[in-house]
Image 1 (cartoon, rainbow, N blue to C red):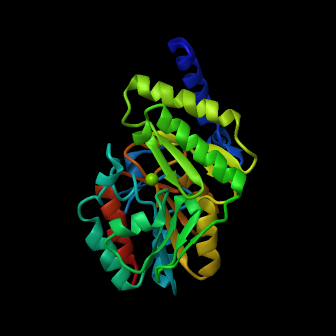
Image 2 (cartoon, protein in one colour):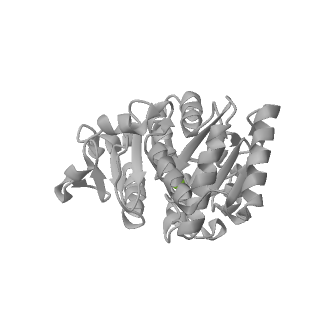
Length: 306
Ligand SMILES: [Mg+2]
């Protein structure tokens, strides 16, 4: 049984790992080196749609012009923390007010809307006001086609066994409520735990990282830590969409560290949008604060599309 001090030290160590943990095998610190300082954001950088530019080389006006001229428009969205606020209980996460009607209007207008989420794809489908949308779930390990066909990335027996065992250990510690088991992944959510619970879960996550089989890796997210099989992430989902719609002008909206893979995988003329109450170092071109600026952006998309 680790001492309290031991738990704190190990949790601190994990915190440091989180800070530099590889996303698409690049430490986040390297991302930081290559992006404009968020402190440099100024209110006069605001442009139509209430959006703040993170990358001055990417004026939003030019994106709207390309969108207006595009033969195909593709809007790809994360859900939790982006379109819906974080809640203590994940089941309570519903869309910000006013978002559902805009999404429905955009779809009617001809914009193709797709989702890329950490949730299981079918679970997200049940929460959406839209029908016949494509969803990449479990961070790209699942794909739900618009016609309802669900496919899952293959999982090796050792990976499955390790994930089962990790899930059992989390449950055995009395944290079944913090556990989320999905296809190819196990996530530990410590957001709603008290300080002691958070420290214990961080220590457990640190322990689990020691025995990870080759085909799995561990990644931090906002409010927790996740173990996943390699080879699929939000970036591979974006790459799949982009390959199938090479003519489309596309944007991706996301809030979390896992969304950085999606930002990185966008085609060169794609738009990466960080949706978040506070800015953070990111590969995104734009930052907007939900829900007002999010609504503003979606309405501006609507206005720009013919
Ligand atoms: Mg999110």
